[in-house]
Amino acid sequence: MKNNIYKSAAMVTGFSIAEKTLGFFYRILLTRIIGAEGIGIYQICLTVFAVFLTVASSGVPVTVSRLMAKSGAKGDLRGKHSAVTAGILSTLFVTIPIALVLFFGKDVFGFLFSDKRCIPIFVILLPGLILTSVYAVIRGSFWGNKQFLPYSIIELLEEAVMVIAGTFLIWGIADPVVGARNAIIAVLISYVFSFIVSLFWYFKKGGKLANPKKQLMPLISSAAPVTAMRTSTSVINSAVAVIFPALFIKVCGMSGSEAIGLFGVAVGMAIPMLYIPSSLIGSIAVVVAPELSENYYKKNKNRVRYDVEKTVRAAIFIATLVVPILFALGKPMSIFLYDSELCGEIVEISSFIIFPLCITMMTNTVLNSMNCEKRTLLYFFISAAAMLLCLCFLTRYMGVYAYILGLALSYIICAALNLRLLIKKCSGIKYSKYTLQSVAVIGLACLFGKLLNGILARYLSVFPQILICAPLILAFTAGALYCLEMFSAHPIKKLFAKD
Image 1 (cartoon, rainbow, N blue to C red):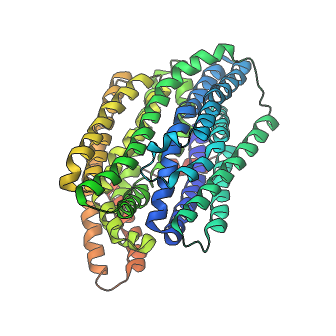
Image 2 (image 1 turned 90 degrees about the horizontal axis):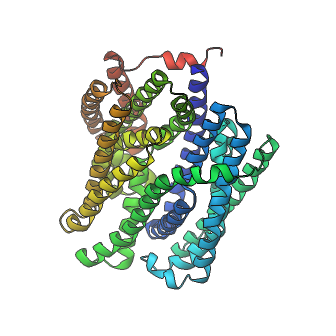
């Protein structure tokens, strides 16, 4: 069983890295062609869309996966089909009315956008709200059945379809508004693709629709807190998309285009670089969550404790490897990718956010798998309040870095509260020493990376700097972790071991 987990995690991670890499270079292409203003419009549309998508289905896939794991522990095949059907009905019940109201009332809801040019572009995405919500449920069924290969392939192909369609549609476009519109059309095309392919695969592999009556209320009860938390995240991101430009227009005297451009640099370019480890965290969470839920409902406390400890350490390990690279190379990477020195400054200063970010992402998944959705929701609200207070009251003094400070505080608070709850739920888990050692390694690796890049920057352009420094920083960090016996080659050997 452990071998299967290692191999599944490695497979999902490999596909996820390919998907994120594809999307990352596509974002660079978008930036080069439609510019910071076009990226700002594109980002605002996706941010507002994410609010409604989150309301409709964000908590459902994880809950469907957990209910299927619970039914699997009891050997109830019909219960699995019932959970999927309940998920589809619940999402359709929400998405169809929302899509209709937004389409016919688009002029009324113009206040959702800081730039009115976004409204007709946003409307293009509305059919995707229904389609991708249904796909989200089917994705949850893949997790619950531990069918990680089809899930990974569909996710990668969805990204590929968006990139191919988007490249074709934006090529040669000089107008940032037209470019943003065509990029949004590409997103819709990718949603249609994943909807059709996922449904085909689900029914081809024996999936069925069953009476959802027994699973509907448990699904709604469990999904509601997760949905509320993720909806609040999307609402906050949407609020930032409105407040951010407005504050800079009012406080700094910027024009609308300048404010949207700064928003595009910070939120459309710099912040996504901080989420580079999310693909690894998400891959591990996807594989571990069904197994953890099944062991939790079987009351296998020793196995649950083992899974929790390993996943938390994995999150810390990933963050430890990534932080020094972005701290030392944030500026040359941003200049090479986006031709933006400001983006590089933001990335370097905010790179340390990755550490609490990784812990928060992983512990949220772990706690939700253990039926702690209401507590994680409460912790989220506490941390979000800290972020909004920083944004509203410190922007006048810190500029764009008020938002960065707010993000840092929110993830630190959430990570600390999540870990505290995990200790109560799984007494005996050990992570304190590992965390402190990781912080020390990050400090040393950041110093090493900064000194090394400082020397190379005198003689080399940005691309050779990245090419030489990145692997050396990674090797230095991995070597320090190995010397402290914080990781071993055992999981790698498991990948090649016979089941």
